[in-house]
Image (cartoon, rainbow, N blue to C red; front, side, top):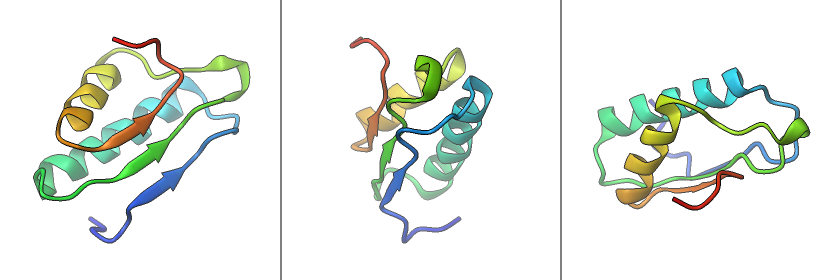
Length: 78
C-alpha cells in the first residue's frame, strides 16, 4: 500500500468498465487495509464512450465516499 498518494486523476481517458471496476477494487482493498484515517481523491470522469463503474464497484465507491474519500465519476447522483 502507498499511504502517501492523495490524488489520482484518470479523467478524460479511454478506460473500460472493467478497468474502472478494477481501479475501484484496488482502492477499496487499500481503504480496508488502511482504515478510514486517510483520504484520497480519485477522478474517473469523462471516459470515452461515457463508461462508468458498475456492480460492486458502485457500493465500494459509496463506502469510501461515506468515509471521507472524494471520488468523481459520471454516475448519476444516488
